[in-house]
Amino acid sequence: MNLIFLGDVVGKGGRNAVRQHLPELRRIYNAQFAVVNGENSAAGNGLTGSCVKELLEVADVITCGDHVWDQKGFENEIHLFPQVVRPANLSDLQPGKGYGIYRNPAGGEIAVISLMGKVFMRDSAYCPFETVEKILEKLPSTVKTIVVDFHAEATSEKLAMGRFLDGKVTAVLGTHTHAQTADAKVLPGGTAVITDAGMCGAEYSVLGREVPAVLKKFRTGMATRLPVVEDGEIRVDGVCVSFDASSGRATGITAFSPLIIPEKR
Image: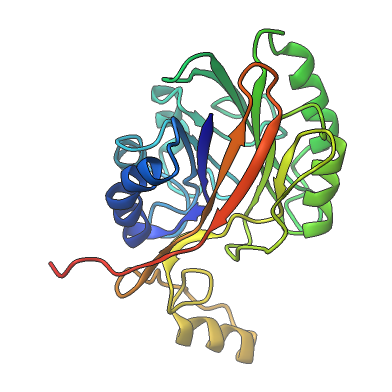
C-alpha cells in the first residue's frame, strides 16, 4: 500500500494547490491515504475551521506544529475535527488530541501521531521521545501502520527520532523548515524517514513568505510583518511512503517536489 504526506501548507495559494493537485498525486502514486501538515494554512500562521474543511476535501488527516493556536478561536474549533492532530507533547490541558487512529479506505487502520521538537523550538513542549513511547504503548496491537509527523527545527533531532523509532513505526516525516531535504530513506528496521518533507507554497519566496519583507527583517534586525505569498508558481512538496499493511514496515519512500503553475483565474 501507499500513502502520501505533504509538507507545510502555506496560505491560500498552498491550500488551493493541495485541493487541486492532491487527488492527481494520489492517482499517480496509487496512494490510498493522505496526510497534510496544515499548520500554516491560514494566512501563513495557524489554522481555521474553514481552512481545515478545504484541506479535508482531499486529505484524510491534518497534522499541526508550533503555530497551531496562532489563529484566534481555533482552540474552540479543533474539537469539531477528529481528523486534526496537534503536537502530542504539548500540555494535556490544551485542546485537541496528539494522535488518532483512522480507517484506511484500502483496508485496516492507520495511526497518525503529531510531535514537536525541542531544539530551537518552544520550551513549553515536553520531551517528544518520552511522549511517543507512551503513545505507542496505548495503541492497539492490531494497528500496524503508524505515521509520525515530527515538526522540528534541527535535522539532527528529526533523524534521531527516526533512529529511535526504527522498527516501531512505519514512517517519521519531518516538517517545519519548509525546505525539502535529500535524505529520504528506509532505515534497517523498516521505518521510512525524511528530515523535512518541504512545503506547499510559493516558489518565489523565502519559506512561503514575501522575499523583500524577509530580506528587510534579516538585514535590519527589526520586527517586520511577513505577508504570505499566494500568487505565481506554487510548489507541492511531499513524499509517498510504500508499506506492508500486515507488518507496518515501510518498503520504500519517494520524495517529490514538483512546481505547479496555477491556472489563470
